[in-house]
Length: 100
Image 1 (tube, helix red, strand yellow):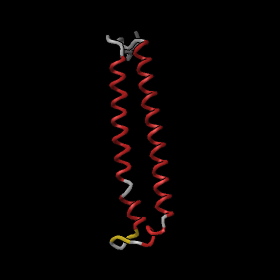
Image 2 (cartoon, helix red, strand yellow):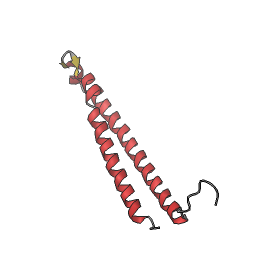
Image 3 (cartoon, helix red, strand yellow):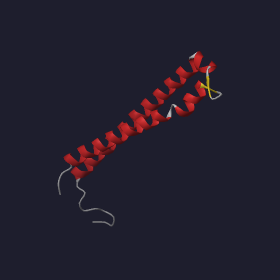
């Protein structure tokens, strides 16, 4: 065996690991796409609702305030969903991984 090769890695382990990597990538792409679509829809809604342009809060238009501070809950929500789903993927991987 050459240097840097883990003797504990088998073909089955490599297949399971590849499956986990694909599942995590699929999850990341799905959530990133969902986040971008949600962010775009919220931005379009904020830009097209005229009352948000005319009303102010502390001298700042509502549209600016919503874009500056209203998007953070979306970021946190998507991050929490990602972490929970990624952990679930890893638990499934651990339950399927062949024992050594």
